[in-house]
Length: 328
Image (cartoon, rainbow, N blue to C red; front, side):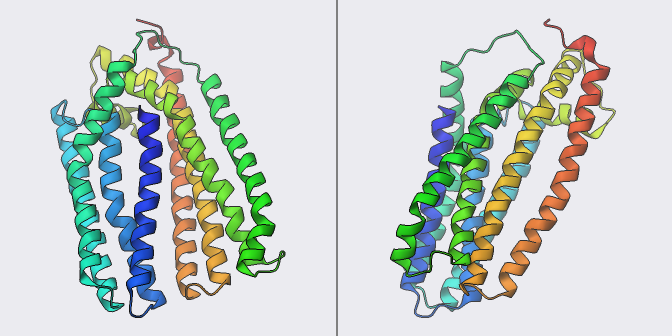
């Protein structure tokens, strides 16, 4: 159920953002590269809030405890602010380009409507998936099989997408009138295997994420409390069950954090290739892709060391509390 919901969410988000962006370009009286970039960022931001909230609700009990409720309100406020800001950017950029007000209102209303229904829909997906799934009390700290499965599926997806892109190369050059050795087209197409592999990595890691849910009792507040102890070295006091859950989380965390890092890295490489291709083709001003590439580079420079540090801390915690990993 969650896999289907994940795929539908990715496809739906892509379709919605694509239709919104295309609609604004078609209906605009004038197209300015700067305002096009602002509108694109606004559309992405407006629809990201509902996706974040819905995804959290589909995996975790957001209001099962006081801690969960506090974190839920924080995420809800951040998602709401992002959606409102995104809708405002869409309206401002759309008015600057002469886009009809009705289209801007439709985009804003759809984004806000999705924000309202995101948590109820996510809750329903979680309850339906939990009702069909069977949670076992047995715990196996070894994640090597799951990790190999993620790597195999990610590599296979990359290879298949690369073959498809290569097969489409000549037909696309004929349709677009580009030369077969055109660098811009080559970079644009080469980004798709990385993006597809990133999606496959996330989907393949759902089994690992489900195991994390089980050891933390599906409670988002408890997850955050355990993560503070394991990954941040906080001195929060945990009861006996909490200590066992923390040890088990630490045993799983290196694999889950590693797959997250791999997925993000693949996605950013794919985005960087696509952004570079647009810059080479003059689709957007040269300063904009430079800024976007700099943002991606800075994000990776921050995320990679943090994730590697968290992985190291989780391994150390699991080793220090190895006696708590037995099935109890």
